[in-house]
Length: 282
Image 1 (cartoon, rainbow, N blue to C red):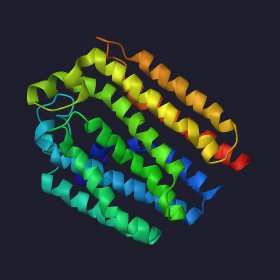
Image 2 (image 1 turned 30 degrees about the vertical axis):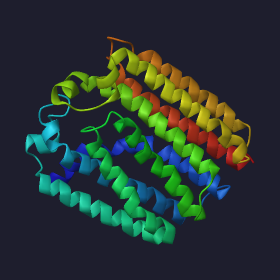
Image 3 (image 1 turned 60 degrees about the horizontal axis):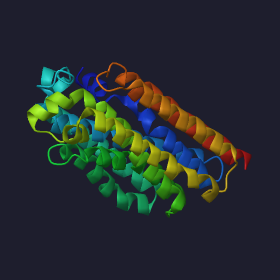
Image 4 (image 1 turned 180 degrees about the vertical axis):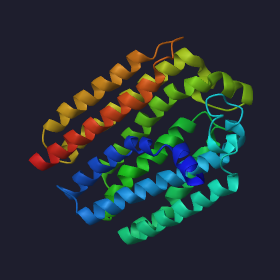
């Protein structure tokens, strides 16, 4: 029952936000279909790293979650899971992640502690900076960057631009999502972009972040030397982001869940699909 509650808390289904960009990076890095055994290890690394990050967030934020109506039903505030149990799960997932990183190569193994530090550090950022959205984006951007390094044992402009795009894609919709907690964050002295500049201006910042996302994705098509089909997918991706912002209006946050989960999940998978097709056509 404890494990079930922990898994419910960490929302495994939200892996769909990072998985598509990981797959896109893997196919470009391989110049075609990646070796299946490598791809399986990379996906497992993502799953365990994300599980470690989310469970650590629940551990670190237990006292904050307790008084927030949106998060009060999580396992630790409800007394379904002890904080020590959650921490034990964090350690387990972290060790598996490091082991998988070792299997993927020396460079991924050496960088695995850095990755863990970044994803754990995010959980404390709302306590002192409004740029927590950017830190969360950096944490998510490790997925395509890590996939590239695992497959090629190097780095380059393609993963660099993809990581930048993911940083601002995630930061953009996290700004929108954090609007739900605006009143609570102000009361608790927590930091976010909506706390600093208010609801209406935060919508403009989210749009700006997503504009940067598109700008950073544009060079990938010719840097990776893949089919022009890539840009059809990028156009669809941009259109869905535009639609996402049409759902959220000042003083009307009723569709934030649709914008946050449904639209972003769809647009990321569409992007990955067109990247994969473009690589295979080329």
